[in-house]
Length: 429
Image 1 (spheres, one colour):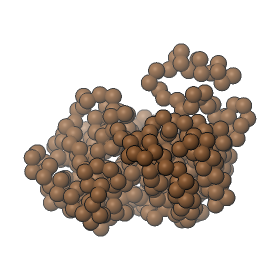
Image 2 (cartoon, rainbow, N blue to C red):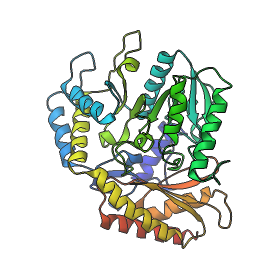
Image 3 (cartoon, rainbow, N blue to C red):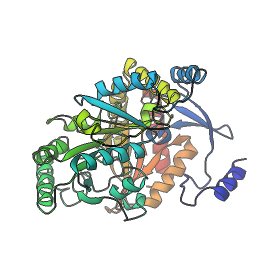
């Protein structure tokens, strides 16, 4: 059945639509932190639909909210008052930390970032954008144009002029050998030098932890130091929280809070985990920025009733069960367990991350060179063990990406670490 589905997939969908595994996997259902394929094989899910199944598969509270709302009304567009949308917007505005916040809902993180770029460029009357090297911000024309990872940026054409800044990757690049304070100082000096050569950009967009780039991050405080430089020139700061939001990093509810010494970002984008699999994205911004557009707009599907009901139920479950705290506790144990595993394998360069957002960087043993073949082999071997993980990295890195639902238990963390250890061993790293 899966072979037939694969043939149909290839016949009707684009060649560039990526599939994991030499024998692609059809998932049919899930529960908690586990999913099942069409043959009935159970897997421990350490990737959550690319960090999207945030709480649990088939969470009863979300399923109930979706079912009840679907029984009343699925959709009306934003042309009509929408109580579930207002309810969720009020909670997100308060949680964002942005004063006088307004919220606009979209259907994806890509669309959220696209909207943030529209707001920033309109507000500042500039089409220049500062972005981070090794970054990823989505697949729309404008989001591709600011993505600093060529593996995910299929064209150099763009409606924006993008300038790339150092700092998103701590352990590689020209400043890797500096201590944290020196690293931040060097990156700030680079930013100041760059700004001395160009007209005033509209904004800096940055992921607090780079997702597709391999779960890399700068020292805490880098973006606060950047913000001080930017604020002096009126340049906005957009925090792309599509992957880091909702407590996934454990230490903070938002990734920007590790860099919050000079206050919150001007604009925050979110998506993925808030819907627990439903299509929700959005933008939070100060009212003066959100309201700067001088023409009408709507969203046909952003904020639709059934997705808002799902998002509200999911958010309340996360807060009431302190899943941020669970990510901090269980994620900390998992990181330490994986670091102990990594010591056995010369092909593992680094285990990094915070909370339940963990990267395992692979290299050719005895070198600092990326080993994408090893990453592909470990991905396959982990599947054979019953573990689903992701992969990523920039032009010089190969990284296994680990991001389970935030309700992961200690026993499941230990089980997953043992599975990955066996996968690394069978791949002869």
